[in-house]
Length: 133
Image 1 (tube, rainbow, N blue to C red):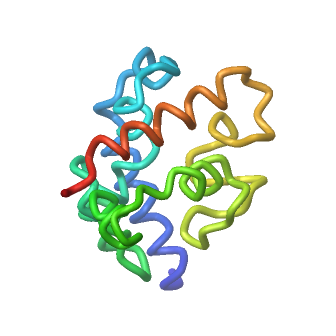
Image 2 (spheres, rainbow, N blue to C red):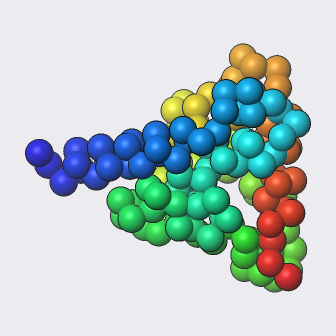
C-alpha cells in the first residue's frame, strides 16, 4: 500500500469517526453554525478549532488554529475570505477543488441546495464566535 493511499485511508477513517457524533438533523439545520462546523470541519480542525482534530495527524500540513483567524489578520475577522474558502470559491489545497470540496457540495456556491448560503453564513458566524481575543 502506498503512503498516499494509507494516508487517505487514515484521513477517511478519522473523519468518519469524528462525524459519527453529529446527527443528520443537526447537519441539515442551516441555522446551526456549530453543527455545520462539527459536521464539516472538526475532523481536521478539532472540536475547539485548535487544529487538533482526529484526522490532523494524517495530513501533510497541520490544520490552522481557527480560533486565531482574527489575531493572524491584525485583529480583523476575515469574514469575506472565510466565505470564499467555505463555499469553495477560494481553493485551499487541503480542502480540495470547488467541484469536490472535502465537506461536499452542500456548502458550495454550485449547490442545488437553496440553504447553501445560509450554511456558509452560519459557519462563518460560528467561527467569529470562537475567536481568541
